[in-house]
Length: 222
Image (tube, rainbow, N blue to C red; front, side, top):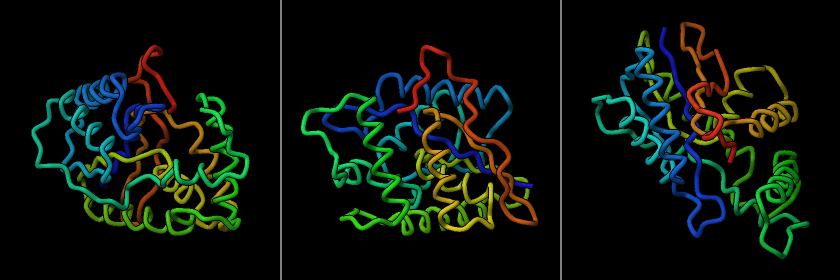
């Protein structure tokens, strides 16, 4: 039986000119995760990452912390996060003044609720298209896992939430899956690990949002 370890990136740079850069704490989270996995005997056959800087930097920090000797990370843009900045900018209730984290989170949750419900809007990508591409990348990663292989995927909270929702209730209708997605997406810790086992019956969710490697003073959600 193979396994996929889906890693959410470390803390990015909220409020900076370029969000897609790990904060100092994000680098620490990545190294802590790598050391944690190595101490537990995890040595992946391959590391796959999305095509975003925060994915690359998290992968680098994780590999450094683990001391793994691996082939170069594979890049699959299907694991990229949806454009949360572009999505929030479509919100009709968008404040005109700069937002702190709490305000941004409230606007973000209202915007994603409209997005996942399929309400009209000038979105960079529809929720249905986003979920479909993530599922395609999950299928590709599961095929790589094979029997007894370990694949680590470095991605983002929204993408991992798509996987968690789809595997939690494969028979759910789109509206129910969207509600599950929202529940998973809002509680995910930076550098957390979601485990998926791959066997003869396909991929199954084993655990979600593991983060015991993150100390209280380094724990973040955004």
